[in-house]
Length: 261
Image (cartoon, rainbow, N blue to C red; front, side, top):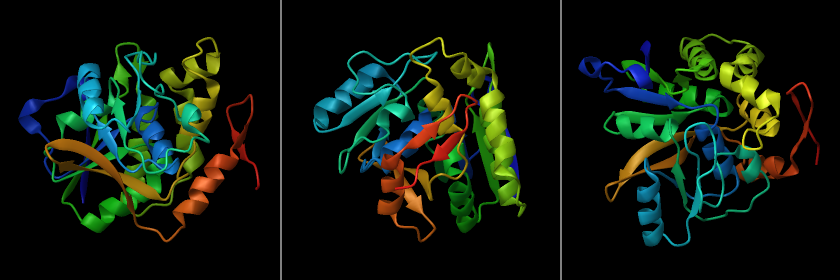
């Protein structure tokens, strides 16, 4: 299995990946999506534009909306920002979710015609690797979405490195990659704790490798891209969701401690 990576903001259109593609957005799009699934969301509709999201909402009036503009500020009129912390403990059982973000969702739209398309984040690391291995693609391409003029994107590069190691049969220490998420350019903005839309709690939840036992795979339905969970393990989804609702004890150093039920 070959692996390679491309950067969303400096793509080479002459060398498009067409086999298996993992669009990675650790801070925070696809971490938020994972926590939404854990909160009971039935499916996720990634929509690139705010106007498109509101159009889809008219067709799906029971849907929940989540997202942010570039830089992380929430979208006016949406139910939630692009924040896993905001979804922690929410009960969204059976409801669809419409997600609009400046990086991750745009990346999914860009590669919507790939043979297999996944939304990647560190919390879904091993589950995503297992799903890819089951597909046996000739090539897996990791799309790095977090690199901007003022951001190194290392939170997403770290996730790609972790997935790459797992796909090649290694057993890497997940904490090494979690530390890179916390210490990335964007991660340090959460640690600064001077922007209410970039809470330290989000960073804590994003930097938890393999928290969930499902992957998020994209498909098409009625012309609309959607994400659904793909589970390769045997863990009980109710147990995972229950653990999420029990919460975490957040520490000043950015680590999290599970609170036993």
